[in-house]
Amino acid sequence: MVERYNDRVQREVLGITLYRHADLEIVLRGFNAAYNGRRQRVLNELSPEMVLRQRLEADPELANPTYKPPSSSLIKQALRIVEDAKEVSHPDIQAVVVHDMRLPSSGFAPD
Image 1 (spheres, rainbow, N blue to C red):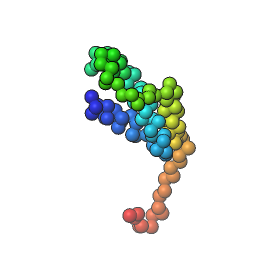
Image 2: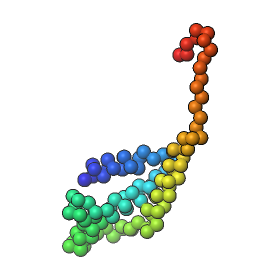
Image 3: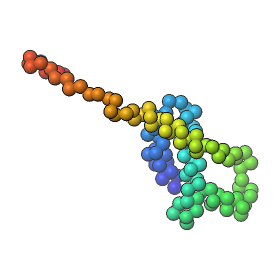
Image 4: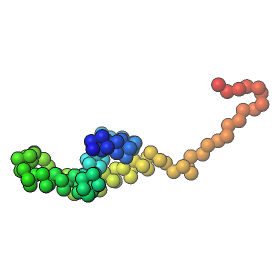
């Protein structure tokens, strides 16, 4: 499952051009929160978060006392950063003009 998760991060997150390390951290935390909240077939239609909660209820000593759950606005913040990155990474293609540069027939061939 870790390899599958890493593949998804590579496909869905690392292809985004972000200009600040802090933005990447927010996007990765948001992706992680969304992933952990999504039900998965391999977990019998439970989310990783639900499985973790069940395991902690069964054995409270497994809990990490320093764990701090993500804020409720984290996913919104991550999506806003991704949307801004898309604006920069994929500018309006109509604004890009490509000129057909033909050389005069002087026998000169470009490198």
